[in-house]
Image (spheres, rainbow, N blue to C red):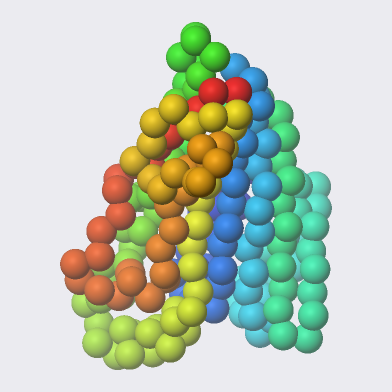
Length: 188
């Protein structure tokens, strides 16, 4: 499961509640990256998602850890930008561009990932049902490298990563907005 397929699945399940997502894309060269992170859901949600294979495909970088209450898919994908950021045709995908000076600009389409939340806010019953399911869960995406040169996200204390995190319950607030693009320029 390449990054965008994994991220799209994670975003869809995150919007349905009971999930935590934490993904880090580390730029390792002018055209290479490594994706690490996890998506964790409550075990009872796993069946509604189509089972363990659709949630965490080992052939596409996933390693499943399961307890009585949670299922966690740990991801490790390494390769070229095309391999790591592979997605379905017509779907929004991250874009990584070598700037030719030892840095890469990574643009992650956050706005497209949260676009479906407006539909949930239109139905008061759905909002009432979703609020307790989303409470306490977060969605984090991180871009890392040897040094972050610039970002519209939150810079880490060591200056080696930038992140964008939001509590999932915020998607129920009408004034909630994420940037259309979360981006960082990183030195590799």
